[in-house]
Length: 83
Image (cartoon, rainbow, N blue to C red; front, top):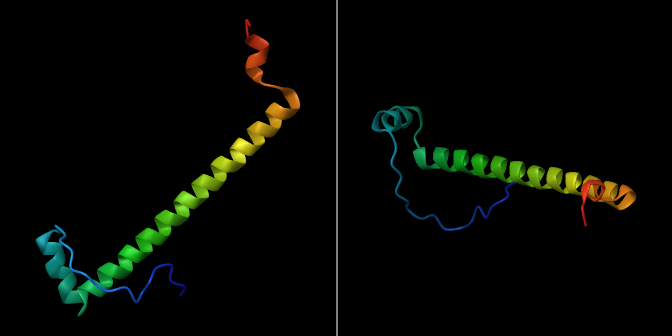
């Protein structure tokens, strides 16, 4: 799997407020809860980054189409302008 972040960056402690029962159940399912949470966080960041990139691309395409229409046909508002 390609990583999009520096996997050699130093680790640092962080404070999280998590449901106590959920943490207890998770600890019973893994020997390294920190690694599991880090993997989920990496997946979240990658997914959200991709969503934001796709949104920006869709907006740019929409803007390009609108600008092309405006360049070819003029502004729709011109038809209704009183100036």
